Length: 208
Image (tube, rainbow, N blue to C red; front, side):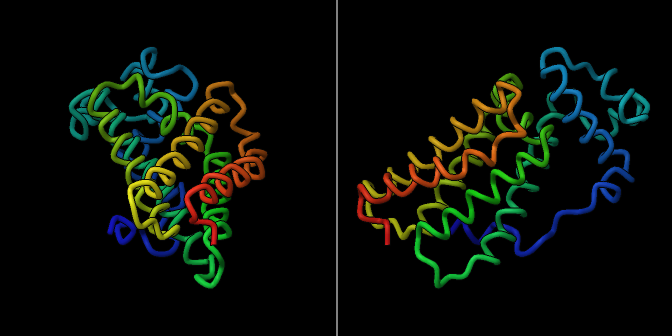
């Protein structure tokens, strides 16, 4: 199952540990520059300036700007997966489906709200970064669908489609807030989104 690929526990490195390496500084610089300027307007020179890394060193790690962005995207996805994995471990398996999904939703929103550059990279600028970035986005989205389907115990295509709809609705509404510069309001979506999740799962008999 895809669920088994989620990291166990809190594997996220402290920011200082990551940026102690040239590659780490470049990834953080890429995410921060893109969050401020957008993918199209972010140059390699801007990333180098923020990371305090030479152009020669940049090309030792990455082929081009797109390659660096894809690595930053993978890093954002890994951070999010680690946080959600930790949240699922803390959520008792004795809790019902909706309660466990709400725990997942809460951790997802809290993580994105606490990391605005990550949120912008993960949800918005990925669509401007080319076909490989979009392929990565679809792959991550599918992993979320598999996770929700696993927690909900989806048994047929109709139930799995409901899980897909849950993930799509959450992603769309969160992305809308991030696009509008309201990342600091993401946790306010928890209650209405939890209600939407309940309704969608109720409709296919998964709310138990």
